[in-house]
Amino acid sequence: QVNLVESGGGLVQAGGSLRLSCAASARISSISAMGWYRQAPGKQRELVAAIPSGGSTNYADSVKGRFTISRDNAQNTVYLQMNSLKAEDTAVYYCNTAPPLGWALPWGQGTQVTVSS
Image (cartoon, rainbow, N blue to C red):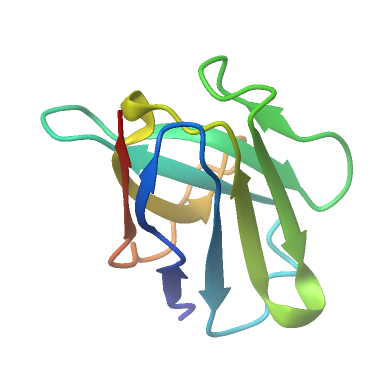
């Protein structure tokens, strides 16, 4: 079983940047698609960025041009660079498998991102 541990969140002013990390307890190179999700209070969890083992990345329209997802299979880690943060980016951020995979790993505890306006 692969466990996921997210880190790097915090409190930042609007316009600032954060870099999130997702460390997996086992090899992720065989997982064809990984993604970052977020869940704001009172809202459903949404996929914001996805990265396949090869090929182009995908982003939700709300973060396109501001967020960059990357993965380091040798380190079993997935990253999310977040720039030009907005108050509406405030949420708990999680990583997990991404579409088109139809299965998920156990969810980690997530990392809280709070953007003050």
